[in-house]
Length: 356
Image (tube, rainbow, N blue to C red):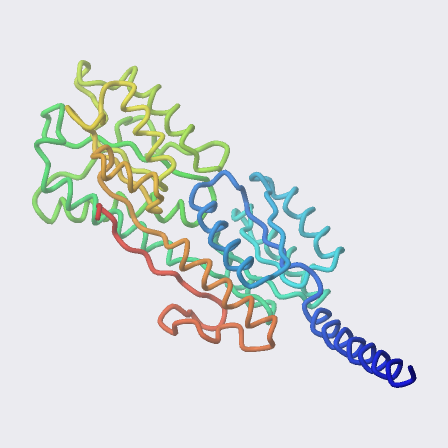
């Protein structure tokens, strides 16, 4: 009996030590990885979210996703609450990119609690990121997307000029859908998507493309809600086509969008008017992101091309940096050096997509 009791006590001691040991490891990982998205409704962001969720779930990480629904006040409140609950990592797709205030406020809150911050996708200024030694930005060279889209459009228009010129006036009339005012990605894509297209055309002796509405000095139409939505583009184009048409000899002959969601919304508007149905007349439409829906539209012949923004690549880079912070390594350890800018930024490369 004494021997049995001794064995039981020994087993209990071992289990107790194991529990203490596991408790120590758990304590190291206490607190959630808090991931904040500017909105769940953005298709590209949804792709990043899906990839992130899989990586975190596969690693057995404790995490939570937060939807700001395009509202910075909501996001700031979510971050404040997450920090109060003991978050150990903030991964932030910041809503307000019109100034540094929102991102700097997040940095200040995190720094006070010594919590690492990874901003991603929506641009954050270097001065903000570099103000905290536990902060990195993961994004893209947003100007490059505009340059690549513009060159792609220019080459396509040059090769198909007469077919695109539905009015037969020797000029190409376009509409540009801008995702959001004050957003650096939107600004660059809006500028270079047109400028680089015109460089290709003028080099070949063709006139520059012209915005369909001569009275619009901005030469773009913006999603007033700042959500880069398909509905905004659809509504705009449906209104445009009531006035600008082949019958009136002023048809919009080219559609350029800052992202695929707006491109797809434009396609829907065109289809309602009898264009881009897969047969018959088609207005060339270009976007950015290479979402699955955009790839399907390109395969169906209702959209011409897009610029691939690698959601999986972005999620993998974020996950690598998060693991580095958690394990006390250099934040950029394991990141391709060609993608690293200084010590503060990682750029995920773009690629042109016109079909498989």
